[in-house]
Length: 203
Image (cartoon, rainbow, N blue to C red; front, side, top):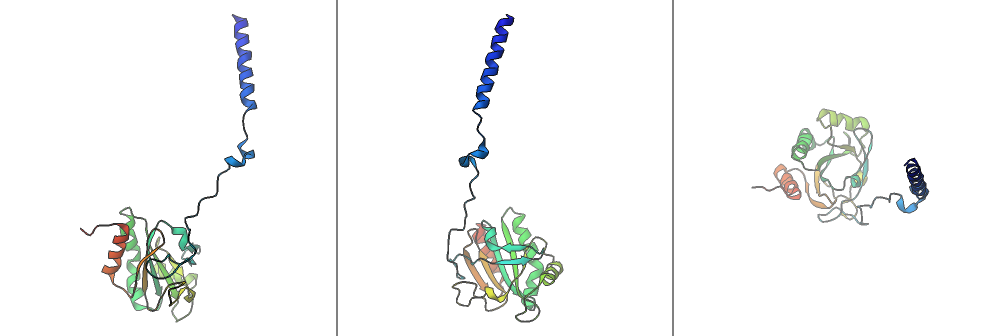
């Protein structure tokens, strides 16, 4: 009996040695390495008209971080192009966070993004302290406030946003396609469009 057990033990050790000999180091195998993530941005052209892919931009947000539009594929967004000297823009601003919260609390992936194109003087670009002041004044915590500039304006809408009045509101769907836009402000129209993009029934 002890001899049988000893032989069994030897066979078991031989089996383990055989298994260890066949262990593959995945670090040495290129096929096992994780592949690069597939980009969801598959287009080259953009524009400022409904049906166009929205043109990308990267601006600093109120936290001092770079905020890139194309990083938010999959999110429905209101792009609120405003200036700090615009009276209507100031009237809208106190409700940006609550508008965003009303959709996100209902389970929707939604952002209200304020792009401040001018500081208090026409053509003066906002700085970090300006957008932080705007965010603090109007209670924007998770609603992004960005320090934009007039380079984003393209009145032809061929390679940018046809902004000719303040505010200009642009609705972008989850595929970064422009759904619609409005020069000026009409609350019922804007949120009717947002509801349509999100598939929210008016009934």
